[in-house]
Length: 332
Ligand code: TYM
Image (cartoon, rainbow, N blue to C red; front, side, top):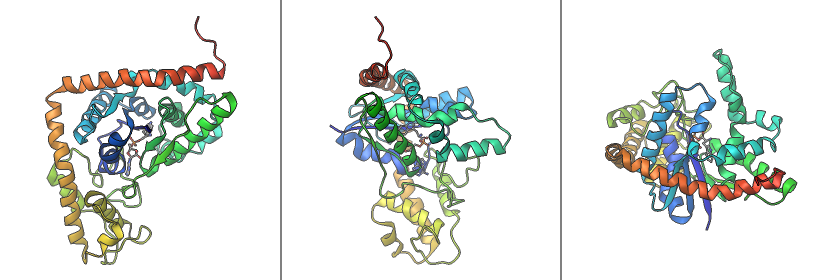
């Protein structure tokens, strides 16, 4: 059976981008067709300045929202990364496999470190080594597929390179995984700035739809989305990024191809209204279930406890094999 691994970082409230780019595939497809393992990757949230209480709160919220979105513990494994030591155990071996140059070439590192430096902040070393921890997340579970949005594709490529290199140097140890991107909405853009990604940790929130936004807030954000000059509804990322983003969101919610949906609209207003309705319809059951689950924290704890136990059992043999292969003496 295909093994799938993916994760989400608790650095902010989950967004429509996370949902359409990743979580929906996990819920609708991945957990049904494969042995799927999903993780709230809290260690990754420590790579930028963070408030400990907020990370803790957001980790629980992310896990609760994943269950509310429809992950079913009877079908998949859901756990919190820091509950399973194998991730950090393996990460060090992969630091001994990766080169400093390839880390510095990662787009997310370049963008985030430039942003930190521009505001006078210091860049944590873990921001540079972050993709190695992500590779460890994936390789520890011998994942065949990694369902992610477009922004994570480069990190999965690096993971493949590290797996191949390790296997060549030390003997076959890791499955070489591949990224699987959704056919639409692989990169949902910010509604106020449709040339940049809708990101959960951005400071300006007017262009970001959060899964837990009140319905009237969601509608307002979509109705106020920046559109392009001109008035025709055309699907073209280069010349019409705003409208194209709305068409992608609509297509992801109702099905169909964005270019074909465009033909049914003669005004931006109608497109925005239908997109808002479709998003609200998609998010309504998630919000309702989230409220129910918040009333039952014991259930979420039990799911995460069982998830971590299963994850540990899955990862342990592969990580032990990597320790042996690289030349570390086993304990007596
Ligand atoms: P994160 O937490 O930023 O995002 C979680 C998932 O949501 C996708 N995504 C988007 N998709 C479409 N449009 C957007 N605007 C958008 N924003 C986010 C991301 O591509 C991702 O699939 N490094 C990862 C977390 C991670 C991970 C892993 C993922 C750590 N270890 C192992 C897969 C496998 C991250 O920061 O995702």
